[in-house]
Image (cartoon, rainbow, N blue to C red):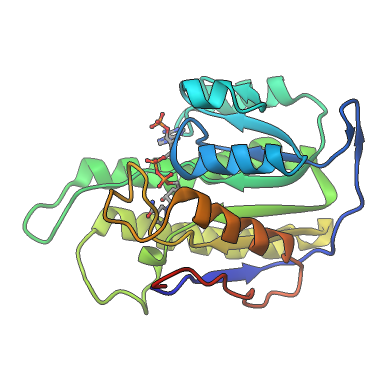
Length: 240
Ligand SMILES: NC(=O)c1ccc[n+]([C@@H]2O[C@H](COP(=O)([O-])OP(=O)(O)OC[C@H]3O[C@@H](n4cnc5c(N)ncnc54)[C@H](OP(=O)(O)O)[C@@H]3O)[C@@H](O)[C@H]2O)c1
């Protein structure tokens, strides 16, 4: 399996930022109660970042992660964007990781139009809602990483089906490209990152890699992001 990472955007390594907790950068991650988002949270905390983790409902593991948690954040709700802004206040963000996402079961024989709309609301519009809410908190320079999927790639689609998920992630990729252009003057780099096929509730138990392996690769890619609109080096996974 190939791990495709479209880098759209750039930024040089940022200077370390001083916070009350010491010299640390701040990363905000969405969808952190489980799966890839939870692992991203744990790994960034372990690596000395100040992590602000958003979720709809707190899980036990998230609670003990060491992150600052903002719960009740549903990407489909305008009120959640307002809550997020209120909770963040003037806090400056170095890395925003839009991870939260949803899957939709459908096929040529069983269209799921409600599920498709829901996928767009969460994966596509929800991601933009978070970026919009936090735009003024993003440092100059800073990074936005968007967890997409290679299922949103038109050229990579050899399997068909999965209409809602594929369409929502393809549209998300388009949104990411526009963000990379619009935010470049503010020195905000934007990257679309496919995390691999990962053993989570969404990926299922037959997936090829663990959340830990996925996140190790994703963090490497994020550390290499810059504004040069190039394809970032891929992180190699077993069987990828
Ligand atoms: N796993 C894979 O193989 C794979 C492959 C390619 C891309 N991805 C992408 O990776 C990201 C993380 O997926 P995952 O595998 O970790 O899936 P997961 O275990 O199902 O976790 C999804 C996360 O998104 C949150 N979420 C769903 N709907 C939400 C909403 N309306 N508002 C706020 N948060 C919401 C979930 O919270 P709740 O628990 O509250 O629902 C959960 O925290 C997604 O964007 C997914 O599309 C995954």
